[in-house]
Image 1 (spheres, rainbow, N blue to C red):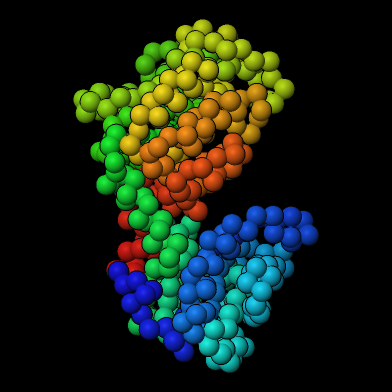
Image 2: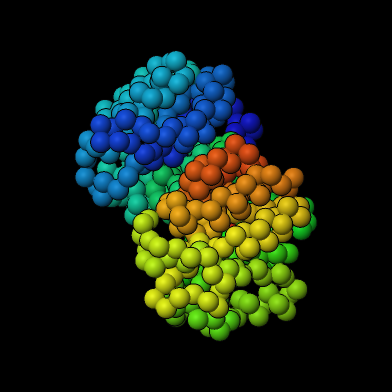
Length: 391
């Protein structure tokens, strides 16, 4: 792939696909602007090199309806406030009016287009729609890692109609961080995998067996592995259809000489509720009708010890129901261990990024991915469609 640095952008109309899918309150105030801040280095580079900057993004799921609550106007205003510079806004993303606004841009000016998903054609990767987007620019840059696992008009379709295309700094950094941590890591490589379902991370678990030295499993998905090993998990959430698969993963890890660590104790609750009665129990002593909702203190201590010995750490998924205080200790201990390790640590986006933030370690790990789904897609060993389209 070309780099932005390989392209002369001066005086050119540069279409940058960003991810400004931002959380907002009921009054359309942005409650977390990290996704905007993650694009500032590229915007500044294009400004200094006198490009005409066209920013495009989606926001939420308007399903092809032009709904004001999904407008990107608040993002334009917020970006202008951060940059202390004018950011123009187009109330559409295609059409004659938008073309006039683009053609009127001066070098260094910024125009943010309205929500791409106000058109269903965006998600359908409609090539006619993609061409209309491409016609707005001379150069296309994909800087939206979080949606680069999607095949959509502004991610893949547009590249068929532009003469020059490349990744932005954020997309480059995300892909490089992943390959440095998984495919070319400092050993030993320890993967910490949690979350609710084995099914959502099955392909990732199977692929990670090709790279890891240790595989630490927590969260509700650990229940399915424990059940596959013959433990009575009582009312704990399990995926019955994946018991055999979990058993196969355990066998494969054993054959490859990979340490696969499962909980030895749990924080059990009598119901899935923040006010549940709780007990710390060994995995073979869960009371009838109770459920495992977090890893126990002995397990957390062991996991922390293994994490401290790592050369590289990949973390994807919490160790328990971290949103409920009674079941957050396991995730906190593991997060603190990752933050305190000397290893390079990469944290998957989505819930794992939220967990890192809640645990106060977001600024203490090496890198937090901006995309949960895209990060998991790469963990499955797949090439991102948004990256393949740029090659």
